[in-house]
Length: 77
Image (tube, rainbow, N blue to C red; front, top):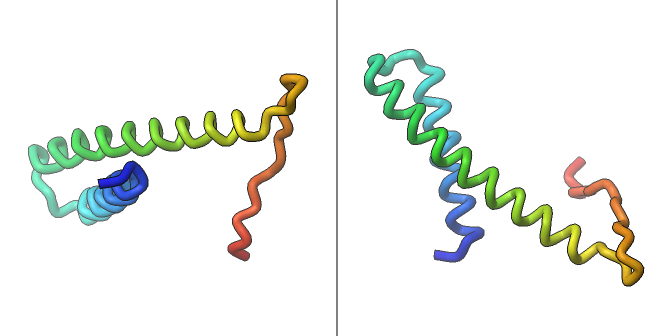
């Protein structure tokens, strides 16, 4: 499984966990277990996003070492 696929799967799982926790129907033990799993998925996703940001910054560096920062425009308006 590619890193992008792992990120997408982990993000989807995190969203599912949040939905389950928001229902309020889990027992305390189930909630704690789900929360713990969610923290792991959150940390994984955060790490992948940090890696992506570093890669983009490297690609945007000028030959003189300065960094060009431009706002990201997704095109989804």
